[in-house]
Image 1: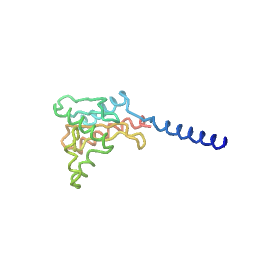
Image 2 (image 1 turned 60 degrees about the vertical axis):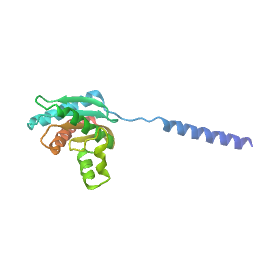
Image 3 (image 1 turned 60 degrees about the horizontal axis):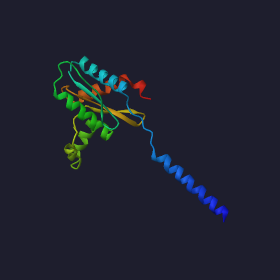
Image 4 (image 1 turned 90 degrees about the vertical axis):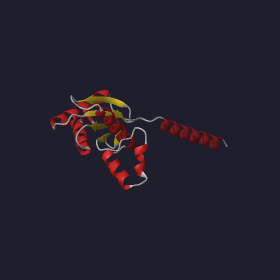
Length: 163
């Protein structure tokens, strides 16, 4: 009987240990310094192409970490870039892919009614491996595909730091 009690106690302690290990998660997230580097590189990419944009970088939860607006960028670019970044981080996908999915799927069309979501091209997730640590959103270029290109250029500039 003592062996049965000891085995039961050991099994329960192993289960409790495994459960408590799963209760706390370790997640990667974007730093302020990295967010600022991506925002600056993104605005610079668009400026080099002649586009006055704003670039917003959010963390994995969609909270704003960095926001930069080029000289002569319209005031609307601030909110659109932040909404695109939030949407991308939230869905862990590009806003272009989400927009296209919503256009093809009638149920997905309801995403436009989610507070804070903006289904226009220009939002790109920032990843370390397969883990999304944030997103960058761009607003102001003459087309979402151009906003997205600048966002991807900004991420590419810091790719060596995303390991």
